Structure formats: C-alpha cells, structure tokens
Image (cartoon, rainbow, N blue to C red; front, side, top):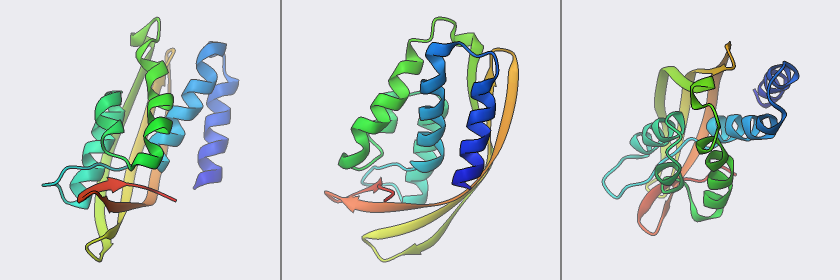
Length: 150
C-alpha cells in the first residue's frame, strides 16, 4: 500500500501542478493515509480515527493535531498548515468516501483500527482516487485515545 501510494503521488506530482504545492501535496497524502486517528476522553479508538479523518478532509489543523500523540503533532501541523495558505483554495479539495473503520484489537491501552475506503484529490481540474486499506495504532496517552502509528 505504501509503494502504491508513493507511485500514485509521484504520478500526480509529475503533472502540471504548481511547483510550490508539489511537496506540500505529498506530505498531505502521507499524513492522511498514515496518521489516521483522534483523541477525546469520551471517544472510542474508532471514533478517534473518524474525527481525525474528518479534520484532515477539512484541513482543520488544530483538530487534527489534537487527535495524534505528542510525538506526531509537529509533523501533522507541518503537513497541513501550508494548505491553509493556498492562493486558490478552490483549486484544491480532498474527499474521503466509503470509509469503513473496524476495531481489530483493543487491550485498554493500545487498539488497532482497520480503515478502508477511498481518498480523492481534486487539484487544478484533475481528479485522482486512491484506495485506503490501512491498520492504525491508537494508544492511550494521558488517559486519552490518540493515533500514534509507529
């Protein structure tokens, strides 16, 4: 899946995209697919993943950042913030669809959530869709469930 995602991102970036957005686009895809998660004292691990996916889809940096473990917050912020400043926001849209989240395991401290569905990018009049089929680690940090993939 990682190789397929990388190949797909390279194909998208090889097209006539604005050069200053190329590296930011790649980072957004990595964060979207690799770091799916969330945190709230009252949320289950699956709900945390759903909340993170929604935050990424809307480029809500603060919400996404609050849903990952401390070790990954700076990475999420650095990957999503540049998209908030896109000169032509209507030229870029991210859409998640057909998402299915299933809790594979949960020992009360670490849970494994399987996510499948589709990620579609609309960019400069082009559309690309990538299948999502990933497992994500959600851990308890300070009593809250947070995504913290290795």
